Image (cartoon, rainbow, N blue to C red; front, side):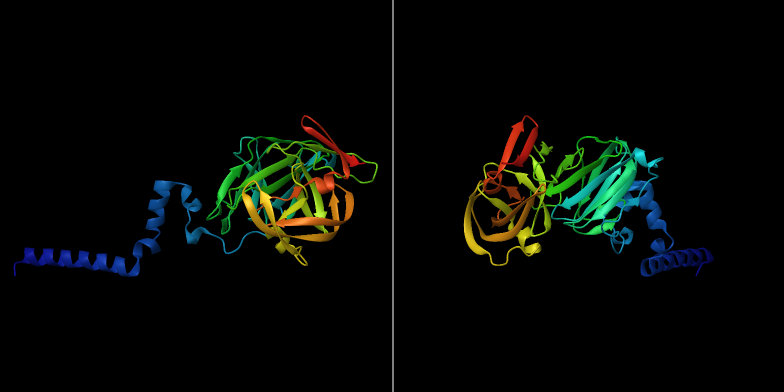
Length: 311
């Protein structure tokens, strides 16, 4: 065999051996070559992709606030503002307070359904963004199967004020989040002579914080509803469906099933009621405060303000 031919046979054999070894032992991945190619093609989007290697094993502790980027510091306590975030959405959320343009993320909190937390920042203007889903990934992308939903307006936190942001469901998917922001919090009456003042929220409705059998619930005020209505899924979650009698209801979506029960304790904005009949609607998406309670109160509405007091 000629030396030149022998040389090229050796070259081809060596090349084939290298290709085979790379395939069997996955040398590009071990040498970090694949990651370099992905990084050069997609930049920072690599970490945001649904890649198992980039996801954490567990989410942050629910209800415990944490810093993301360097947040502005409160110089004095009198300059501080507080916002309460209440997750009544049917999915867990990552709520983040940002700069007004959304470019800088200051403080965040991971909240399971039915939990709430408080964030303290200097008074000023902020953006607010919610990431929601069912499979947690990491702080960069939130949920691997989720959505990013920014609050459509800036929020202003005043000095020594306590605002509230309630996250409510209006559908069955993770992105069906309704924001209910109150600049000074959802007011709570403290005695029988006090007037409860509510502001119209972004969805065009009035909302009020209450409770049923000690379980905190945010109701939407609905003068067209005859009774207090709670979604059946929420009722079963907090064990309100005990001793519940089957019933049918006529709603805007048609005839739906559910049940009715008498609860021992129901509060609305600090006003207390006992032995109240409550409907648990399998077709409902949101707790509604109907006329069975509203008829026992004095309700006055003037444009975007509603005043509630005892008769």
